Amino acid sequence: MALTGVNRPGRAAIALFERIAGEPLAQTDRLTGAIQLCLVKPGESIFSQDDPHPYLYVVESGLLKFTYLRSDGEEWIKSFIVEGQFFASLSALAPAGCASFSAIAIEACRLERIPFVALRDLADTDLGWSRMIRTALMIFGERKERRERQFLTLDREEHYRSLVNEEPDLVARVPQKDLASYLGITAVGLSRISARVRAEASRST
Image (cartoon, one colour):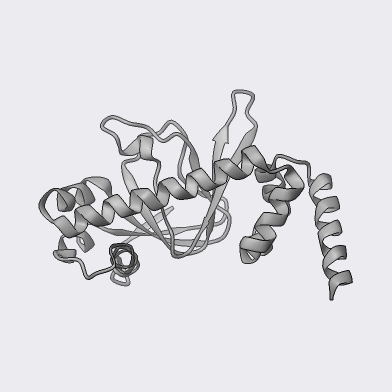
């Protein structure tokens, strides 16, 4: 992963944070001075499970997957994230904390990396930033809760159909092997499910 200071990093992060806040935020120069632009190649790791990594990222462009590594060495994909969203391992943001998962680029990515301490310091002194972080945590929690509900209440085919209906662009971009891993099925099983869904769609048109 290459870190660079070119192209005025911080624009994507500030724009996203102000959308979350629903208002312009003060003292943005304090944050932009701490932001680094990260250029990540496909297959590269942004951080690894169990590593200290107290940073938050805003995805300017690209597609990433978040994975857990089991004791037998098998990778389990917990989620994906695309441009216009933010991510961090909450465990790693705690004092002396470590990441609970790994973040890996599927496509080439441009990310803005923000030291969490810079956000925390702003929130400690500015009410607007404090409200923004609170709202961002609610968004983060709702996203996690929705995924957990899908895993616990939908079977694999229902989950795939839900993804196709709600996030068709994501389904089109994610490699089939990664999508199968995310759904907890084999690539052959995913191929059969997707074939049924396509056949039903063609009959209904």
